[in-house]
Each structure stands twice: as C-alpha cells, then as structure tokens.
Length: 140
Image (cartoon, rainbow, N blue to C red; front, side):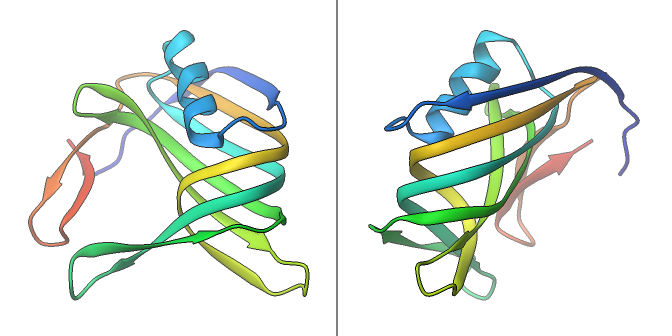
C-alpha cells in the first residue's frame, strides 16, 4: 500500500529544557492540524522511556533510563490513530560511555531539542489493529 503526497510545509523549532518530547510534539501537531508527515530531531535528554516490540509475544517491553544522553537519531511519522493525530517516533541515544541504545520512544525529558517537521498534503494514513503482527499499522 502506497500513497503519494506533496510537501505542504516544513517547520523547524525547538522544545525547551524540561519539556517532554512526545507531548510537546503532539501539542504542536494538534495546534497546527498536521495529520501526515515526517518528524526528525537532534539534541539531548535527561531521562527517557523507550520500548522494544517482542514479536513472538506481540507486546512492547519498555525500559526507563534516568541519565543524560545525546539524541543521535530521532525519526517518526505522523498519521491518525483512534481519530487522533498520532506521532510514531523511534530514537537512538548515546550514553556517556559512547554505547548506544534505541527503540520506540514513549517519553523523554528535554535537555536540548531541535526538530524538523515536514507536513504532507494529501489524504493521511490511518492506523488500525493488524491481527497478524499485533501492531497498529497503516491501513488503506
């Protein structure tokens, strides 16, 4: 399943120290009625909750990290889930010892964070439950 989009707008911004990334981005998306697009970002966090999807158990395993880390890569997409704007974001983080962790981003407290949002023009994807994977995936 493929949809064709045009770029409508490109936004750049930042969240302030102490803000939470998912709720901050979600607020921006809702205020600007952005229903389809891409999100990327760089910066640093003071604490984070990420998840890994266990394919055999069909459930997420999450873990909290309460330490300062650099955001090496943050990427996500924007669609609709349960009639709400939904940013689905993954993240890769670097620890003080230069090791890396990553996964599905649930929440993160900002130390410094700059982002780009590319808004698409066109009919957005909606997420629906997929029995085979146990995930909420894009449907036609």
